[in-house]
Amino acid sequence: MALSSTATVLPLGKGERTAARIREVALDQFSRLGFERVTMAGIAEEAGVSQATLHHHFGDKDQLWRAAMLGLANVIAEEERLLAAAQDAAAIVQLRMAMRLFLQISWKHPALGRIVALEGMAGGERLVWLNEHLLGARNRRLAALVRKAIADGELKPFPPEQVVVTLQAGAVGIVNLRPLLEVNFGIDPDTPRGRAAHEELVLDGLFAGLLADGAEVKKKTTRRARR
Image 1 (cartoon, rainbow, N blue to C red):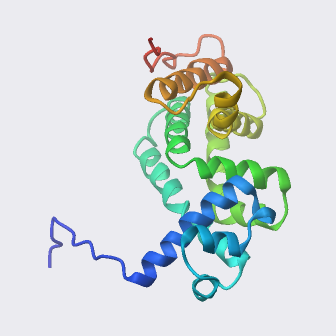
Image 2 (tube, rainbow, N blue to C red):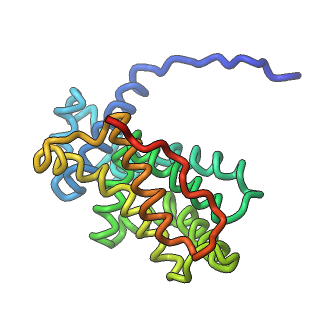
C-alpha cells in the first residue's frame, strides 16, 4: 500500500514531554557548565521536576549526559543528509558547503560547539563516547575531503586533521564567546547582520586563506554586512 503524502504527528505523552524537557535542560547545562559542575538537583530544579521523577527517567548523571548528547545526533544527521546531496561535487565545494552548514548549525544549536570544546579539552571516556557515537565518522569524512582537495591542487598542503579542527574551532569561537563579545565590546553577534559577518569572516577569510594559489573555488558567497 502506498504511503500517504501527509504524515500524522502524534502528540508526545506526558512522560515523553517530561523526558524531553529534562534532556533539553541537561544539554544546556552540560554545555555551559561542564559535566563536573552539573548536578542532578540543579537539572531537576530548572526542568521543574522532582529528583524522583528525574531519576525515574534517567538513572544517573552519566546516563542523562549520554541521552542529552544523543539529542544532537539528529542535528549531525541533517547535516550529513544535506552534504550527501552534493557528494558528486568537487571536494573543495563540498568542504565549503560543510563549513556553511556547520556555521548555521552552530548558531541554531550552540550546545554542540560548546560540548565539543569542553570535552575536546578534557579528554577521557566522554570524548571517546562522542567520537564513537557522534563526531568521529563525520570528522574523518571531512579530513578525507581535505586530502582530496589537496590532491586536486585546491588547498594548501596542511595536515588534513588540523585543517578540520582549525576550521571548526574558528567557526564556533564567535558562538561560544558571544558573552565575551557582549561584555568586552557591547555587541551581540547573534543577529542577522552579525551572523552574516561571521559567515563571511570564516568562509572568505579563514577558509579562503587555505586555498592554494590559483584555486578555482568561488570565494565570495556571502553579502558583506552593511550598516
